[in-house]
Length: 249
Length: 261
Image 1: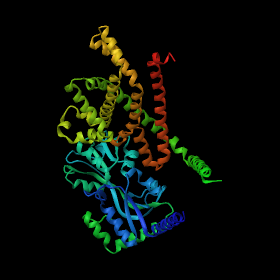
Image 2: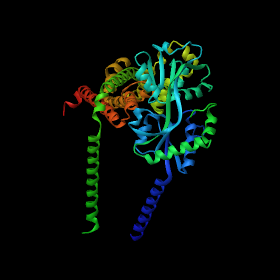
Image 3: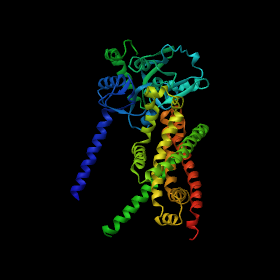
Image 4: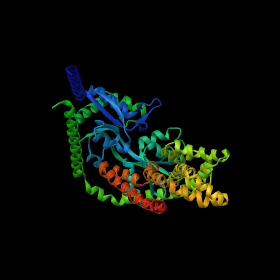
């Protein structure tokens, strides 16, 4: 019995120490893993992409030990609130609606929205009336379609951006509205041949930030300082150049 | 006081303590919910529920019509009749419904001759793809339920039908199928309930059924607990009403068996 109590005590102390160590410098980062080139699963099953490179650079800057957790997009904010991870680095636009649920850091890149559709089909934004337009559920593109276009076009919402592209390629969709940089990547892929941007880019002040739980200002400030530091020391530019021939900051 | 009497007492105390804490936690949680948002989006959820009911009703009805002949083929002693039916049932019972939906929706859309065929106007609609996948899936399960019931018809009743000179078709119509139908009712009701809940997968191919609508609302409100709870209650009500109706049917169909008691 005595031995059992001693063992239990040892386990308790060890567990307590681990928790303390975790609190010090371990950060769990939530991302989606289906949003190339920002975050996607490679053929070895690892999460890679711009978001992941930035996350790693920030963690190196902050001298923190980070683990990446993947989570479906429409559960990504609930997952943060449920403490499954401590920050979201998943190309999330900073919006007023989301600010009600989470706090954001300063931007780590900026984006805009732009339609894509079949090349040479003579598509225009005005001519979308009655056509099927897709977007990923829960993105600002989806909210834009639901709020501004739902009365004139047939809006289809997808679980992932990739599924929306699949339906564009199959002909079920006439157009996809999405982040310009993500659309740019798809247009450059094999599947995207035969498709092109149409209409002007809009919502240009779309800033992408890191989301943390409300009130966790300590972590948020650390991220802000780290973003500033990697932009200043050229790490950011190096990562940027891996993905885009132009600056996206 | 020795350990043997103390341990059950402690266990009991712990059990009630945990139960009480849990109950208190649930009640506290329920008082913290934002009921306004549930009410605000009730209209949307209702429309989603209608689509869910429509999808389930059509696929179960058509599935029934496919299941009866499939079950008869499956129960046939001739291998070239029973094997194809078995292969169909095995395929659809052996793979997840989600995979079947994805194969019908995204898979068929990758094949060029499907896109050029007269079926494309239907297959391009998520609605028809969901109906096709649901129907084929539920038909396979139902066929297997019917097959079991057909084989469970008491041998004495079949012998009696043969003894009075019924033809095979007449025996099937008057004895085997009506008896099998009554035997399988409880299992069949279970399958329909599974279908009501399985229909939530329609939300993965852009359909705004109850789950799809709930997820779309959550993407806007970031209130998963409230909205999923509301959706869960609606699913519960759907299955509750269905169970009640089915109990009635079951009671009526098997009246001659229960009346004697």
